[in-house]
Image (cartoon, rainbow, N blue to C red; front, side, top):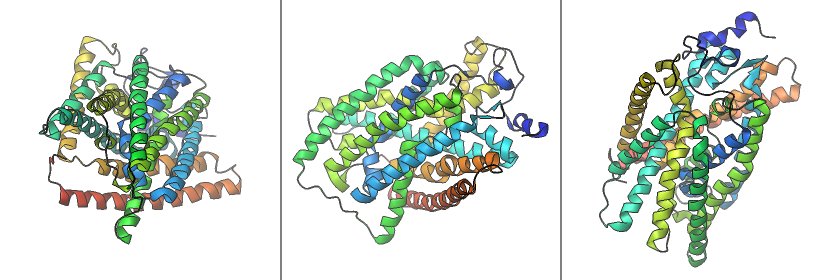
Length: 447
């Protein structure tokens, strides 16, 4: 059992903790400007399916399968998919410890391991979120540029579309401030998701049948193959997990653990079949020559590319919001007046400023470093591997280590060691890719 001193740690490590007001004080004294204990598992399940089937999947044929080929590619897809499902299933159980609810990952790590792990988790999560959002902005910009390319042989620079995308994301985040508030937009997001995916799959199958010169060889030197292979594993991890499970779980009504696991079953069945399916069919259709952005490869009439890119852009406005919501929650809890409504005049003004600063920063960095694969590989390696695989096993050993069987202890220690090493290797691979791209492209490159 935790001591009284231990259970008070959450207050010390929660830097967003403000005065506890009746409108924002939740169960166990948790304070947040956002909604807690409200949503159904069906809503969260649909949110996960649509969010993970965002525009990112248009780059996964290249990022996940080209460096690995068919055999290793399929093996890694299956193994990483199963492992991420298990890791998230495990972490969901620790949303409550001895009756204490943890709505933020960093609060849980700080409670169990101390102040240093609180801040390490905070940095890892926020790097994951920020880099992921920059990738979203880049994808949205590329979608708009592809539309422009269908009407002009000299489209505007990519940076203009990145700015437009950043502005659109800002507007949505300002008007739809919380994750729970996305409920009304999930129907539209679902329609957009399956609109572009169905059309895309039809064209991919058509192109694949007509393409008789497909090459599935893994190109490059032995060193390149090894590093690119580890980069592909990072991309597969990004494809399957967000590192934000406890923050997403905080929106669920009771029983939160059971409901989160139901939502995860939805993601790792219906959702996984779609994003893996698109990745596999894209690789089958074009082989190792597949682009980092699938719509660039598509044949057929002009309207096909326009519809796919426009639907991708619109869908990304909604889906990116889920992945960035924890930062919005932190900033809102820190800077908004918690004794007033989210939509009070003062809070609307403050929300406008914090959202504007956040998206201005993300948009500027994205415009300066428009390298698609680098975003995916870097946050899939350095930050997301520890958050997804290492930390849950650490939590298990801390909470249940004294009563767990020896084989379970060995299992979780093996996870900690294996995935810590994998994080180091994949991070080296990602940094190597960034260095190569910086040499190839200039800042603010029109890719």
